[in-house]
Image (cartoon, rainbow, N blue to C red; front, top):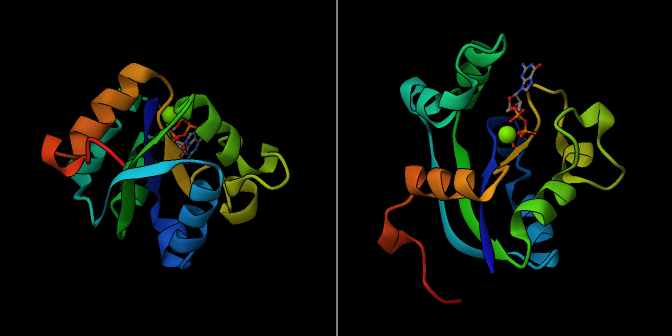
Length: 140
Ligand code: GTP
Ligand code: MG
């Protein structure tokens, strides 16, 4: 089974959509291996998004991600990375398919409700960025 790092972003937590989003992910067969709610500092957000440093939206992205609490999960499933990205939909909710999490809960490309890892190496780095080994349960 594969793992992916999932974040319910500040906009969705502020609107009380956390539970609905987790319920949907469980319906889609994802197992929550680790979970916590934290309010990132700006520096922690910058470290998480280091690969985007230098892009035009980097400052806006890091301000947004550190504006209020987020809920972070390590999820497990067969083909978790691709399946998760299918369930959340396109980065810009205007382009997201009907029924996807971003179509349902996101307002804009900047405030788009959720994050998901884009490849196995990113998932490993991102899970290790937020969770100590003992926080990720080894079995369901
Ligand atoms: P993540 O799951 O959050 O990584 O989204 P993604 O993989 O679909 O998008 P990408 O990694 O390319 O960009 C990371 C995040 O930067 C996006 O989820 C958006 O929140 C934000 N972002 C991307 N493009 C823009 C943009 O043009 N403007 C703003 N404000 N934010 C953007
Ligand atoms: Mg990405």
